[in-house]
Image 1: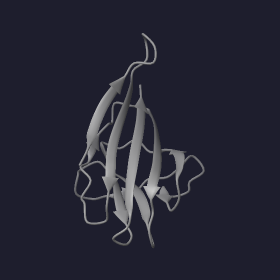
Image 2: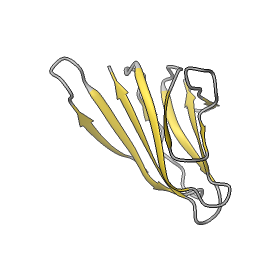
Image 3: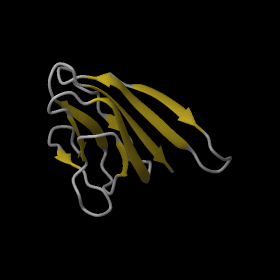
Amino acid sequence: MLIQSYRTPTQTQVAYVAHWDNVTPSDTAEPLQAAQYTDKSVQVFGTFGVGGAVSFQGSNDGVNWAVLTDPQGNPLLFTSAKIEMVSEATMLVRPVITGDASTSLTVLLLAKE
């Protein structure tokens, strides 16, 4: 469950926006390979429901996953709508959604060179 689109803000800089739209706890979000992009931020919004949350994870092998952090070292665990920078550079990234049946969240990843 991933929709991708490219954006070109300037002639010398390329930015990429990946969308995981209306993801529920029963969905498995497809990992995105974005290691070539040095700056990343994650935006989460939608219906959080009871216990709704998104952990934003990274992996270098696609098997072992860890929750990534913001520049202050806080885990990227979203329990409300917001945008956070991603500190770590990993080969793969993905959101993992938890919550009740009413939870439906959209996760946007802006990655730029």
